[in-house]
Length: 117
Image 1 (cartoon, rainbow, N blue to C red):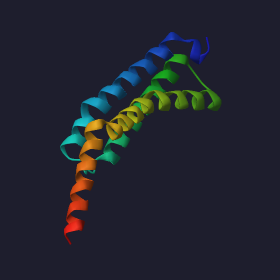
Image 2: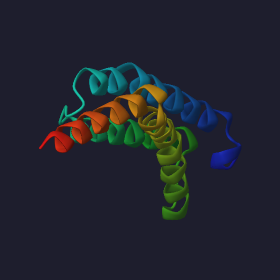
Image 3: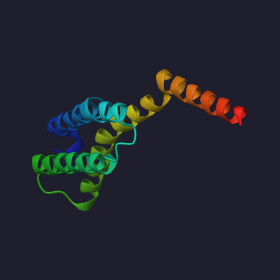
Protein backbone atom coordinates (compact mmCIF):
# COMPACT_ATOMS: atom_id res chain seq x y z
CA UNK A 1 0.00 0.00 0.00
CA UNK A 2 1.40 3.40 -0.93
CA UNK A 3 1.41 6.31 1.46
CA UNK A 4 -1.52 8.23 -0.03
CA UNK A 5 -3.74 5.18 -0.50
CA UNK A 6 -3.47 4.34 3.19
CA UNK A 7 -6.60 5.57 5.02
CA UNK A 8 -4.51 6.22 8.14
CA UNK A 9 -2.54 8.87 6.22
CA UNK A 10 -5.73 10.75 5.41
CA UNK A 11 -6.99 10.35 8.96
CA UNK A 12 -3.79 11.92 10.33
CA UNK A 13 -3.98 14.77 7.80
CA UNK A 14 -7.64 15.35 8.71
CA UNK A 15 -6.77 15.40 12.42
CA UNK A 16 -4.00 17.91 11.70
CA UNK A 17 -6.40 20.13 9.73
CA UNK A 18 -8.97 20.04 12.54
CA UNK A 19 -6.30 20.76 15.16
CA UNK A 20 -4.93 23.65 13.08
CA UNK A 21 -8.41 25.14 12.63
CA UNK A 22 -9.06 24.83 16.37
CA UNK A 23 -5.71 26.44 17.13
CA UNK A 24 -6.31 29.27 14.66
CA UNK A 25 -9.83 30.13 15.78
CA UNK A 26 -9.54 29.06 19.42
CA UNK A 27 -6.16 30.50 20.39
CA UNK A 28 -4.68 32.77 17.74
CA UNK A 29 -7.79 34.80 16.92
CA UNK A 30 -8.78 35.57 20.54
CA UNK A 31 -5.18 36.53 21.31
CA UNK A 32 -5.06 38.84 18.31
CA UNK A 33 -8.40 40.44 19.20
CA UNK A 34 -7.37 41.09 22.81
CA UNK A 35 -4.03 42.58 21.85
CA UNK A 36 -3.35 43.13 18.13
CA UNK A 37 0.39 43.65 18.73
CA UNK A 38 0.68 40.46 20.80
CA UNK A 39 4.22 39.60 19.63
CA UNK A 40 3.54 35.87 19.89
CA UNK A 41 3.54 35.09 16.18
CA UNK A 42 6.88 33.27 16.38
CA UNK A 43 5.54 31.06 19.19
CA UNK A 44 2.42 30.28 17.16
CA UNK A 45 4.55 29.37 14.12
CA UNK A 46 6.80 27.08 16.19
CA UNK A 47 3.75 25.32 17.66
CA UNK A 48 2.30 24.88 14.17
CA UNK A 49 5.61 23.55 12.87
CA UNK A 50 5.63 21.08 15.76
CA UNK A 51 2.18 19.85 14.72
CA UNK A 52 3.33 19.44 11.12
CA UNK A 53 6.46 17.57 12.23
CA UNK A 54 4.42 15.28 14.48
CA UNK A 55 1.91 14.54 11.70
CA UNK A 56 4.76 13.84 9.25
CA UNK A 57 6.40 11.47 11.71
CA UNK A 58 3.10 9.68 12.39
CA UNK A 59 2.41 9.25 8.68
CA UNK A 60 5.90 7.87 8.03
CA UNK A 61 5.53 5.53 11.02
CA UNK A 62 2.12 4.34 9.79
CA UNK A 63 3.44 3.58 6.31
CA UNK A 64 6.82 2.06 7.04
CA UNK A 65 10.15 3.13 5.57
CA UNK A 66 9.97 5.95 3.03
CA UNK A 67 12.46 7.41 0.61
CA UNK A 68 13.19 11.13 0.39
CA UNK A 69 10.59 11.72 -2.32
CA UNK A 70 7.82 10.15 -0.25
CA UNK A 71 8.89 12.08 2.84
CA UNK A 72 8.88 15.30 0.80
CA UNK A 73 5.35 14.58 -0.44
CA UNK A 74 4.20 13.73 3.09
CA UNK A 75 5.76 16.93 4.44
CA UNK A 76 4.11 19.05 1.73
CA UNK A 77 0.73 17.46 2.44
CA UNK A 78 1.17 18.06 6.18
CA UNK A 79 2.21 21.68 5.59
CA UNK A 80 -0.91 22.21 3.47
CA UNK A 81 -3.18 20.48 5.99
CA UNK A 82 -1.77 22.49 8.89
CA UNK A 83 -1.22 25.76 7.07
CA UNK A 84 -4.41 26.29 5.10
CA UNK A 85 -6.65 26.76 8.17
CA UNK A 86 -4.15 29.29 9.54
CA UNK A 87 -4.08 31.20 6.25
CA UNK A 88 -7.87 31.10 6.04
CA UNK A 89 -8.23 32.49 9.57
CA UNK A 90 -5.67 35.23 8.90
CA UNK A 91 -7.41 36.36 5.71
CA UNK A 92 -10.81 36.17 7.39
CA UNK A 93 -9.60 38.26 10.31
CA UNK A 94 -8.00 40.93 8.16
CA UNK A 95 -10.95 41.25 5.80
CA UNK A 96 -13.70 41.13 8.40
CA UNK A 97 -16.14 43.99 8.28
CA UNK A 98 -15.55 44.93 11.92
CA UNK A 99 -11.84 45.34 11.38
CA UNK A 100 -12.36 47.33 8.20
CA UNK A 101 -14.88 49.58 9.97
CA UNK A 102 -12.47 50.17 12.85
CA UNK A 103 -9.69 51.04 10.43
CA UNK A 104 -11.94 53.48 8.55
CA UNK A 105 -12.92 55.09 11.85
CA UNK A 106 -9.26 55.43 12.88
CA UNK A 107 -8.39 56.96 9.51
CA UNK A 108 -11.27 59.41 9.83
CA UNK A 109 -9.98 60.46 13.27
CA UNK A 110 -6.48 60.97 11.83
CA UNK A 111 -7.93 63.07 9.00
CA UNK A 112 -9.84 65.15 11.56
CA UNK A 113 -6.70 65.73 13.63
CA UNK A 114 -4.68 66.65 10.56
CA UNK A 115 -7.39 69.02 9.34
CA UNK A 116 -7.38 70.85 12.70
CA UNK A 117 -3.66 71.53 12.51
